[in-house]
Length: 523
Image 1 (spheres, one colour):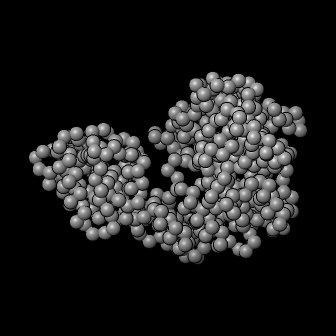
Image 2: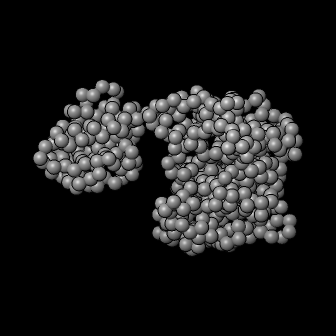
Image 3: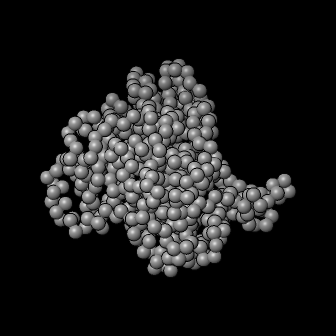
């Protein structure tokens, strides 16, 4: 199957399109109002500029925005039947109401990279509008206020959107894994150079590390779609779900996994996408993006791009919502969907097999869940080779050390001298233990603490004792409850790392804290 046409029939690579104007645009950009992008906007802009979001050539104007929210279609680009072209996720340039007052329709604004203030593009304003965020949350992300995208809308996104077309000046500059950050045009050329132009290519989307099961399922997916098929491992390295493993760790894993595929079968490219965790709509979005990257098949799994469950244990999306939505629009897609086939390990045969091909009542199987893997990393317990490759486990252990190598923070919420006394007692007590962990004491009254820096100290393996009259919620949120102990004047739950500070005998509190740290595996 030949490399498919981009979505809408044309790859909108704005940097290449406007290359002959670059010197003029650079000169003009210095004289225009400047708007510094947010991390999400930077990811979105990169994919507009390189054609990954084709047919988009800018941030959505009001008409396109309303149509995408309500009908998943653009008004400015039509398909062969004259209907609006499919586009399920609104790509918007959000600003504060105060910032929006600076601009008018027809203005030109320079968009700057937040990391180094490089001018990346100039937008010509077509509309400035106040979106109905409640409507966007309900129709695009199903309305649950706990959904990550809805929390972003309510707590982070600006209240006004600016829509308009772009002229490209520069790609955002990356300093990591440059050879693997391929644009749609570059990846299409790579497929031709590899001799894959007339072969089927299946893309695998992931935001997690890959293990043996992932290798097996992708190889089977390629086999299922025909002879001479190939695999594109296409992980997201932009913004993913809060709490996900960082992209540096994951890319190191992907590079190791790539070596385990048969020669010439698979390729790796990194996608600078800001995920919304938008379930079925996001799955359709992912498929359109992969079409632009030159792929004709796409693996869609169970609860694809879903954020899991809310605090009440209710799933944000059904397990097969994504596959059903893609099936509904399959006639309008240049890409074919390959359903994810869950595989399981058969210890008696030392091989993996699709779970739907075996009798679970008679055949012995083995698996390690995500929770079990995290526990093994935390405790330092062995992770068997049938589950993951030693090279992968080594990388994961480097960034997810076992408990006895992890740091922690003890927050002493007390503005009396008793809290100071306890901090000295704890520092002396804990420093007598063996190991590489350094115990440092920070007093909020003497040195105003920075939650980010405390978290960095904890991530480096240090033990931090923080005395403060504040609740230090920012610290506990960043560090996480598993690595935080709290001491206050209130009676707490010792099993959860909460301790009461009393003047009766500090030794009792010290002993309780030491016992807890030992029980949790820190010592």
